Image (cartoon, rainbow, N blue to C red; front, top):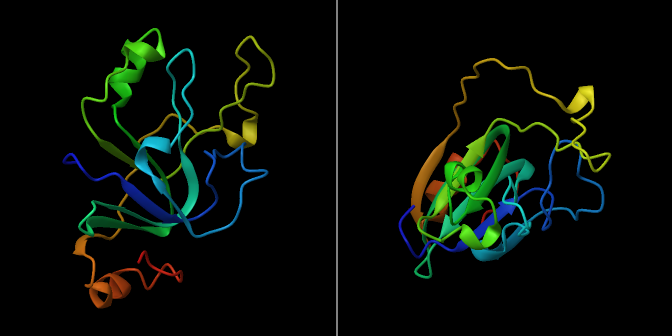
Length: 163
């Protein structure tokens, strides 16, 4: 995404990160936050900031220009200032640089596991099979004030659109 798109709003659980096996204690929709707060910083870089069961997600700049993605019926989404390869190539969080802005949209994500401190996998109901998945969803660029067009796009996600 171009620089400056640092506002994110979504209809789904939050504001804390959520995964298939980590949803308790999150509040209901809709949610808004600054992109820079989308996930916790861990001492060892790893996946973070994911949002599950997202009906729609909008990323905008200060001027109200943005991108709206709508789940069919749900998406799993994360916004970060670095890509997955940056996360996996860094040994410590301080090695990550905010070189780019990344919007990650998935059908779903595997649970994080972590029942112990030595790397237990997610429980069976929260694992995903290793197979290819084809994902399609409606998405549209919009400008604040073009709500009629974005409402038409999101009618499969019966939720209040970002203001």
